[in-house]
Length: 234
Image 1 (tube, one colour):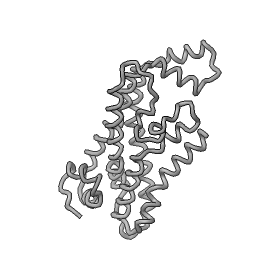
Image 2 (tube, rainbow, N blue to C red):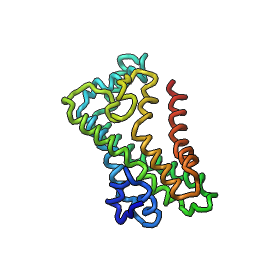
Image 3 (cartoon, one colour):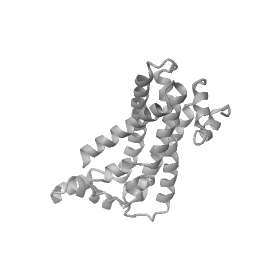
Image 4 (tube, rainbow, N blue to C red):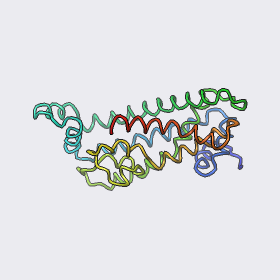
């Protein structure tokens, strides 16, 4: 296990040598601010770019067809008048940041509760909260890919928001927004598998849990989210 001496090195090593990173952040304070800012920025930029390029009238029409299929012309006009591309860009920025903070807090609480009776585990909620941002770093790769794909679009493009998650099954298999499977397929992402792996490494590093138990603990939150998504959309 190579020694990790600074947070910049840790952001690089987390992808291929995560054991050293989680060992280091368990001993160092304030290292998790760097991945926090990286993840937050890259999580919000693709959505901001998307609403600056997409044909917003087309986007609204697709939204209405899915959520209000029986809407009257007056309701459709009212819906369209109440929203704008600029407004959606601001919503993406605000909700993206708040959403990530909440998700990280919920997962940190889960990890704290699951590991609290382990003899080796001495980590507090804040320790686990900081660790979440390291687990989220694979999402940066997906965000980078999304930014590239969006910037290649022509202004006014009629492109599904699946492009925001290019490593999702929805984008890979071209699942249409109108499909009942769209939300579920958007939730199944290749980078999520990587994040689950990082979570299992952290749990194994910080506790006496076996590798198998660490994987099970790490994958449960994702399975719950996908299960709830399927229950409400299928």
